Image (tube, rainbow, N blue to C red; front, side, top):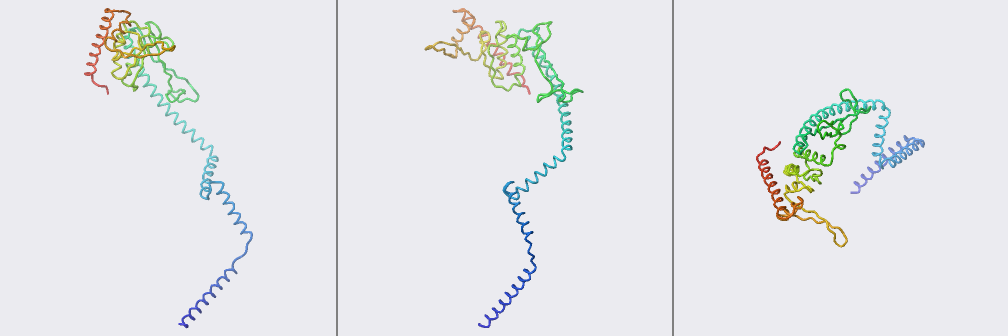
Length: 320
């Protein structure tokens, strides 16, 4: 046992001596270079400062450096980059010009169809001699898009400036609708447009505020028919003083004002049966039994027309 322990100790002493010799040889080979040590320390300090300033880590600083090199490269190649952008701009302007020309042509075709349809509706609304047109204007611009050899100003709607035109009487030249149409004419034109565009108008509710302005009693029946046709596709709210028009409503509300405790209040009453007859008689300017008979006749005539219209809608083919 003792001999074994002695052999182990001898081996350990021999191993320690060998490690000592190895360490001495390594120490003799090392050259002391204070300048290199200082350079390494300065390099480490610079890396720590860069990491602190540009993201908190060496990886973040390297990413910032890569981005900075890209920016520098773009600056160095600025003229080449600008030339590329200008070429791309020219391509896009040419494409926009092509699309704008196509859109303008389709607009003009649709405008002719719309004008003809509006004139037919206006004839029904007692404006047989009226001419409705859609005017187109285009403006040239140095910053415009090329269309048929011209540079035209444009925006997201194209190169056209569109305006509705009206000649209310035969022999007149169409002029801007907003300048020449009276209140009654404007109401009828609006009604004509709404009737034509009912199939594509997505608004669920349409409000007509005194569409009967400037309209006589003979036209009231036609207005009522047109509005009821619109009511097959939309909810229609109509403010009117015309009894022929009021008779077409599915519901009749009387709006009145009265004074209470020194203040004006507005009341809304849903009229039914006799109450509705009395109100329409009052709108006709008649009283007594004769007025109620006239009101009853108006309501009956409207109900009969609406029934025929409902039958026509039920049998008419659906648009696609």
